[in-house]
Length: 427
Image 1: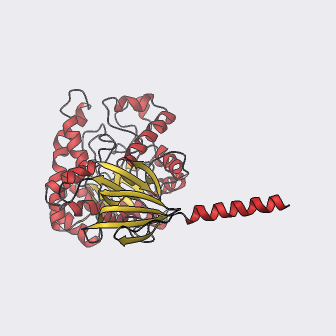
Image 2: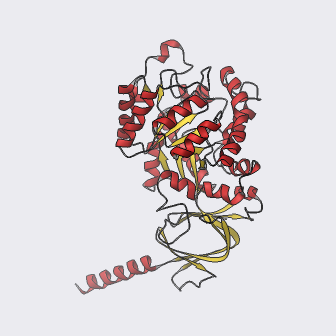
Image 3: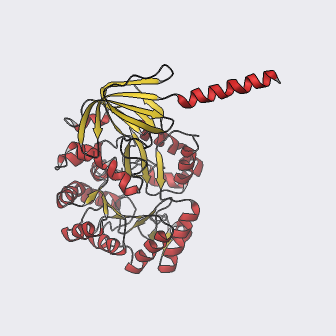
């Protein structure tokens, strides 16, 4: 009895000490993404998963506390990428792989891509389209089974028959069949509602539609609208009933207009976006996720003989180089912008390239970082939990070598990654 009491008291003491331990982070420079300014000599105090204090100067930790010395680094909130594809990565074999890869193959590959993304400083991503393995990957990360960013996923994208996300595009006719709403292929309002409900049932956090043709699908057109207005309206109305957002892949302007009229939450890519559409987006509060890196990457890969099928090569050469210019115009006009790259179209972990391309056409360095922190959190509706380094927020914190306010290229040099108070990288 006495031994049991002693053991119980010891366990209680150990538990109290564990929960009392704090982590003190000494930041030489700290980016205040709310005000786009650089602070110097700051201390961030973390308890468990949460930031409990942010103080000026280097506060001294207690004897039981942990100290992380980042005095030579620039510290900022964990980065967010609002357009990735965690299940795959570019390869000239991509169009063959869908016939030979099993679901388990896709899953094991996705684990590697997830860890690579986290190590690059991206603690939150929005996965906009895969086979459904992306839902299982999200669950595995949330359960602590594998390492990766926090994932907000759309599961399988929704498209019409022959549209950009029809999984049977380019197949032999006897293999095409007639896919329907259960795999995200719709024709008409009833199909639209069923497809959304199916994705929600499968566990999707957000819905994605392909409002126009796309570059990498084996189909001739990359710009034409793919949904009638009533179909778009039905998708968005149904998703809204579930309390979730809808994102629209769109290169052509007419498809963007229809999506904005229907109440779309974000436009992805936006290659041929007109000034009229920009103004519509500003009035409606629609977000724009540019994915410049994808545009530049596909244009480069198209120059490699045999990398893409002929229809894809032609679209990549035409559409790819235009996105950066559209982004510059949309930024100057005042469209709301969140950071997104389309990682998977190029190698995961190279997401930082988007910062370089954004600043090349006029966005200040710290504002570009703001799009990948505060603004992305706002797009997700999660700004009360993530996106800034403030008391009460989740401890998603990264650091880079160098000063990104002076040289945005140092965003490549991530040396420290903390997600929800747990350190995943410390070089």
